[in-house]
Image (tube, rainbow, N blue to C red):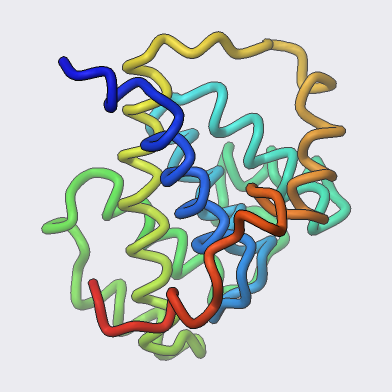
Length: 178
């Protein structure tokens, strides 16, 4: 394979995509988007992603136990019914995009989710299936101690995924693509 695949540019572009999906202004709060990424990563058993995004979600929510509760059984977690419905959709996407049911989408809408929130949930879930496979496919080393992720989670929650000068501008993220 060509060196472009393993060089800094593709990884940098993936980091910029994560910044757009999770840190830029969006239809869902940053914490909700991080929670979706965490949940999908836990379903995919990607230790690094579920730990790092879980720590970032915990920094947003100010509650590490909530993140663990969502990973274990989101239906009994202390989150809104709308977010539970969106996590249902995210879980369906994790299995296959074709698994998303009309019933799940209708339930999310009934509970107040907008079409763009549903779209963003599907996009984040699909992207994190790709990210999880990328991270695991490269055999990324992942610390087992949750403490190793906490400070970085606070940093990501505060500053995002790329330095400000390298951030994709909002005007580049509002096109009609995808």
